[in-house]
Image (cartoon, rainbow, N blue to C red; front, top):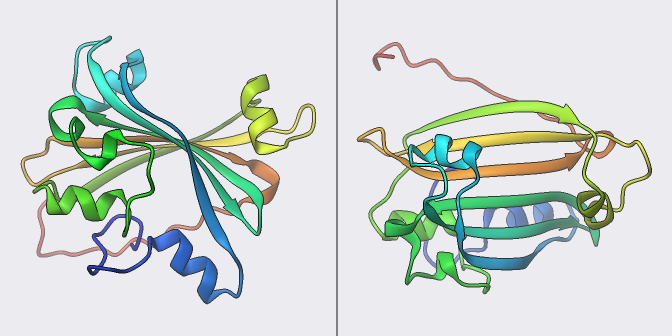
Length: 175
């Protein structure tokens, strides 16, 4: 689960490294970052009151200069304010690595995948044709105390993506 675990110091983020290993070029652009009022679905994911202030980072993920994903990542304000998570610069090793360095390690993740027709802005950013659907993956990451520390909303062109999950069952862990 390279996207969900901290990286060794000085390494690239998991997406860039995975693309290079496949002989391709992966990248991302930070479109905006900062404090916003949490939309109702994000507040619910993070266990906050609707409209609470959160930190959001919006990124456009690319593979060989082709947009593959538009991602909004939200963090509780008390975790992210005053850190690189609230800034528009790329984070060496990725946000999960920075979160771990700040003492917030994810131990459980819940994901939901749906499909829908994108809004016009999303269609333009992802370079989609009219009527082309997107997959919408939402992910909530929880720490060892079961506190939500990160909420992601990812939009991916349905025709350019394959979602694959590997699930390992550990009978020694309850729940």
